[in-house]
Structure formats: structure tokens, C-alpha cells
Amino acid sequence: MLGLTMKRAMGELALIERIRSGGAKTGKRTEPNLVLGIGDDCAILRSPRGHEILVTTDFSLEGRHFRRDWHPADSVGHRALARGLSDLAAMGARPLAAFLSLALPPEILATRAGRAWVDHFFTGLRSVAAQLGVPLAGGDTSESPTNHILADIVLVGSAPAGRALRRSGGRPGDSLYVTGALGGAAAELAAMEARAATSSKPPRMPSPGQTASHPQLLPQPRLAVGQALLRRPLATAAIDLSDGLSTDLAHLCRESGVGAEISAAALPIHPLAAAAGNPLALALNGGEDYELLFAAPSTARVPRSIGGVPITRIGYLTRGTAITIVNPEGHATPLKPGGWEHFTPKH
Ligand SMILES: [Mg+2]
Image 1: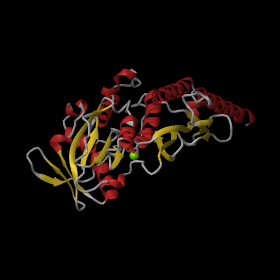
Image 2: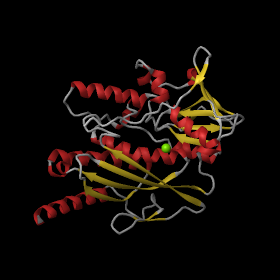
Image 3: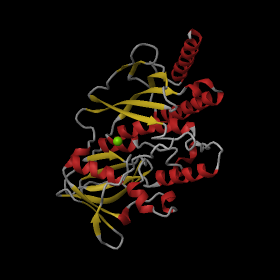
Image 4: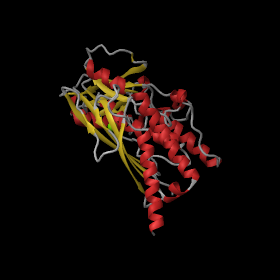
């Protein structure tokens, strides 16, 4: 018993070292808000002057948010952090620090392939952290009591006091915009499912330069756009598109107490979705695009792109609560929330 306990403890220590090696060194000029990182009982963060603190958490559960036979480990790490950062982006916040809690099944800790999986998970996570300047400031690891990997990310960010973008600020007459393109993540997931059904080879990780053609594996949180919308200021309300436009638009409308009308013809369709048989359904309901949906006064000068990310006007907010979509023939029909519920575990 003691031997096994020791072995597990050693494994855990090694994991903590791994988190630490990818974690933040405090006192660097690039991380002025991290007073104390990994190594003590708590991290210490310094709130930027005049800012409020924003906190969001996101589970990445195997069989619910990813599958080991579909998603390369690097992508699981990338997506775990990107999803949390997308929530900060939606509120115009800038990230201060990330925290990771990781539960790993015994077979992952005991096998070389399993340890390689963890290495690649951290490679993916660290690459997003480095690209977007987010220090990994703490974490916890445990042996999972199930056969499933569980990763929980906590993101702490900040925004100027009283100015964080909320879902609730939209007003009738405001124009509605989305960033980037829609439906690509769900289209790529469908292709990954088809590939896994016919191939026993492990999924391949695309190179970091191929983000545009891999919206499912390498989603790009729109932090710079969110911060620009807050700074200028442009947006009256914003949300990130995690569950799909139809569902997330309904969230924004409910919180703002308004309805909306969007135009199917105006939706920016991702090329992967356009090549699939059902581009409109993917764009409306596919989910996991991690683009931003925001409202801005009709008189606001919203640029066509921010930091190289295209901005597209897709409709406007209305009085009442009805949400409608005008099809390319000009007919308006109710838009029902049909968003992504992620996939049901198959094992
Ligand atoms: Mg969100």
C-alpha cells in the first residue's frame, strides 16, 4: 500500500513540477499583476489600478467536451484554456492568470503513452498561454476515480471598473455583429468523427499556423476584439459563441430584455461549414466557434475588422422578445435556440 501511495504521490509531484515549468515566474515585467505564482498555498494577484476582477471557470470533461480518439492531446490543452479566455474576451477583460485542476485516470499516470498524452496536453495549453500572455499561476492534480480525464480551468481577468461588457446592455435598434466565421468548429468535429470511424490511427495535431482551417482543434479567443469593443467604447452588450448563435443570441436577448431579427444571407459562414451539406444549421446551432456576438448602437462606426478579425453585421435588436431569422427569400421565421449541447458520451 505504502509503495503504491508513494508512487502516486511521486506522479502527482511530477505533474505539479510540469505545471510549474509551464507556469509563471513572478516579478517579470510581462506579468506585473502576478505577485506570487506556483509554490505557495495560494497565488497572489495584484488588481490593476481602477480595475475590477472577473472570474470564470470551465470544465473540459472527456466524453463530454473532447474525446481522446478524436482530439489530439495538444488540442485538448489548447481548447481548455481558449474556452475560458473566450469568456474573458466576451466581457472585454484582459487575463491576469489561469489556474488548472487536472484529474487523470490511473492508466494515464502508469503508461508511457499516458504520460505522453499529458506532455502534449501541456504543450497545447502552454502555447495558448504564451501566445496570449496568460500566466499559469497555480493548479492541482489528482488521480481520477473514473476512466475519464477531467480538466477544470479557472481564469481571472480584469476590466476597468464598471465597464466590463455584459449581456444585458442591448437596446432595441442596436445593430448585431459577429466576429470571424460561424459553423466551422462543428463542421470540423463532424469530419473528425467520420475519420475516427474509419481509422484507428491517433488524431493528428495541425501546426499552429493552421488555426483558420481548424476552428474545432485550435479555437482563437477574441481577446483583442473584446478589449477594443470596451475601450472605444462600441458594444452595448456582448457574449461569446460557445453554444451556437441561436442559443447565445437568445441569452443576450433575454438578459437585455429585447428581441432580435437576423438575416441568414448576412451570416459569415466558415469555409468548412460552407463545404458541408447544412451550412446554415451549422452556423446557427453548431457551437464552439468561440467568436463574439455583440450589439452596438446603430449610429456607431463599427469597423469591418478589428486586429485582422472580420466583423459582420448580421441583424439588429427589436422591441419585445421575439427572435426571428429572415431567410434568403425574404421570409421571417422564428429562430429557436438549437444550440450545441456537446456530444453525448458513447463510452
Ligand atoms: Mg461564455
